[in-house]
Structure formats: structure tokens, C-alpha cells
Image (tube, rainbow, N blue to C red; front, side):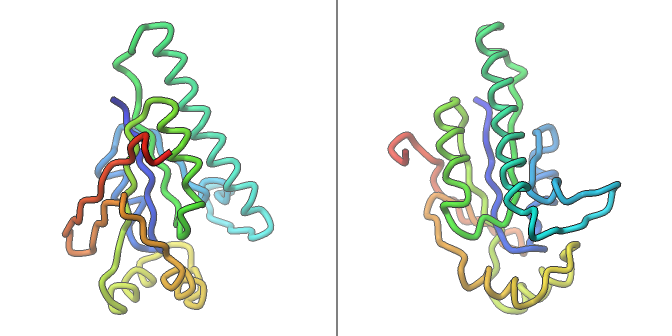
Length: 170
């Protein structure tokens, strides 16, 4: 069964790196993709809602193509995993992905790149590639909602398994 993996975590926490290392053959989407202009990241706050919509449309389009291929070829084994990596600070920010993935027959996993202390958060900020201001990152840390379904991955490689999303979660 193909997976829909939803990555969450503050900027610099390693979402994209972890996703590409652990799901190299998956189709990857992120709001950040929308802000890439000629190979350069140019964040425009006024276009963030368009970025969110674009990411969702791209992921949904891939799910639909995979499902269409399944109908034509009867459970085509080429169905690809999909990874969406965004900060997803609040659960509502990714619940539509969860619901659509479940309805489309994906095994849905939520992976949170977690931190244990302020020192790790500082490291995340130093290695972040988008120069997100400290006050924005601090707000994200403070507002990050706990999701018991999420598998938490820590900087030292420790993993705390969460449960996969089930139909009862819908």
C-alpha cells in the first residue's frame, strides 16, 4: 500500500532532508516549492495562501493519477508514495491531507521532527536555509500542537513511534 507521509516541524528541523533520505522514490511537495524563483528561495508572505493551495493541489493531483492508474491496471504496483513536508504547526494545517489520503487508500503517516531542548532549537535555526526570524520560530515552537498519531524523530536519531492514522480518525 502506498504511503502519504506528512512531515511537520519547525524550520531547520530536518523535515526535507529526512523525507528525501527515507523516501527517495516518493513524490515530494512543500509550500516552499511555490516560493522558488529561478532556483532561488524568495518567500512572499502575501502569496503564502497560494503556496498552501498549490501544495495541496499538487498532492491531490498525484493521488488522483495514482488512483486512475489503479483503476486501469487493477492495483498497479507502480503507485508512488507521497511526502508533504511543511511546518504544519497546527493539526488543522494537515488534516485535509490526512482525510484525502485515507479516502484515496493511502497508508497515512505523520512524522514530526522534534526537539528536546532550546539548544536543539538553536541548532535548527542555524542550519535552516530560509532565514526565518527567531521570533517566528519561537512562536512556532510555542504553538506546535501535540498529535498522538505522529512518530517523533529527534535530532539524535531517537524515534518515538506514533500510531498510523486509521479510518476511526476520520
